[in-house]
Picture 1 (tube, rainbow, N blue to C red):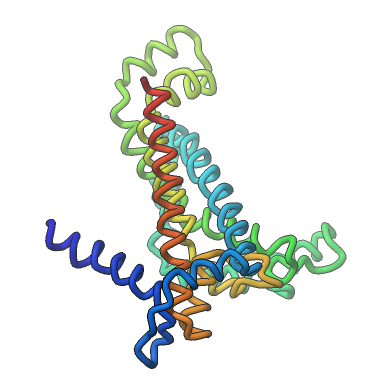
Picture 2 (picture 1 turned 135 degrees about the horizontal axis):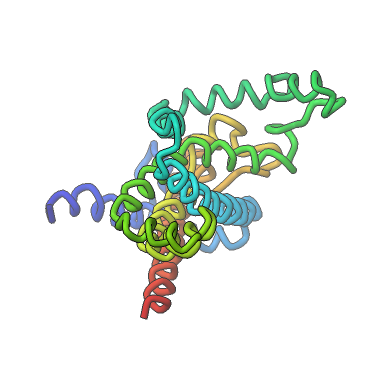
Length: 273
């Protein structure tokens, strides 16, 4: 295990840090430039915009994927009719390849796509909405697609954990006359805190490095409105051939993920004391 961690985790990190200290362009050996790539990030307005976009996407996705699947899991756990169908339907987006689902959403959200056609046909809108071409909507469209694709994973986490809650607690709540909503907030939520913490950390880490949806849906546009750090790293490395600068961004992103996740764990630990 230590060997695997060293080869597939530690070595890539160390190698990325090393490249970030050079002007390597992927074609010729890089020259050592020290911290110049990191200093350049401080004066790069595109990087600043990407950081803000990453923070907004991470916050929205984390809140959605932590909060929405929990009541859905409780709803399915209550042995509703066709619960197997709902469980499979909600998990289906997870097994669909990311590129395929993103392309399908791009067709749906296009200026002349299915969603705009339905809105105009029903009289809700007179003109198309620029879901992917309007800076006010592009980032939120990406967020919706990320949440839709990942919802099933967190639903299964909650479903697996809710099965560990003793049935006697639900029966006692029913005897006391508690409604389903009251049982959810008084019984389910307090006992599901470990699962909530797990979903928060996983969704936060994954959303900070979201790439596929941004790449397929908007390519970071329009006007950098949806360009996050992960996409900017790819663009800098493989379009501009600035691997040193891209590696510096990757190191910053890694540190940001480590700090944010560590802060969440520390906060959760203090609240549990």
